[in-house]
Length: 275
Image (tube, rainbow, N blue to C red; front, side, top):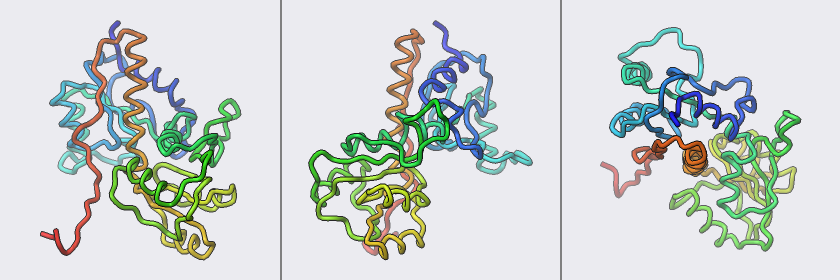
């Protein structure tokens, strides 16, 4: 079967219904023609010039990113600016770009569910339930527990492995024994109070505000900032896997690839490795 961009959109809408996106968000087909035949798909977190270059090198004319390439209305497209170069490059090479953002955050099998599963949490449920009555298990973040409590060392070892980091920033003291954990992939500082109110002993998210970190210390609560990139990156591999399953079932006969060039935007410098 010939796969077209609209077929990919249809499958994404099943995996992560677009109506679950936040009102302020911009998701779906953001650049390109829905009737265009798909040669290959490349998936990544961020719509960057390097990601489009990678797609071109791989012969992929469809790109799916978690963060939308067009987030706010553009008053003009300046092709000398980074965003303008990206759009010009995509349009010149007829590359469709699809955004799968807060709908993928909120769906039952989305970003935070993947993070909770990789941490080994059981019986998890939404931290902030979705207002959509037909999706009782959808919502932002997840909160769950371990059948047997983990020691702080066991939890930290597991956390660093999942995040693919060698350290994390923590506000408050990591409990010696951990049973209940709340997570929110990406920016989730505003959900810390809800995580504590629901009984979490630890809250993992990213872009934690200074005031929220101080609040956690004052309340004897523990918040971990796992960084936006690292808390969301595991979801991209899952997205590729689900699209591969759909492609097999529908006989698309196209390659569905996860980016190999995308990297954490922050690097660590100290006095020993500063150039």
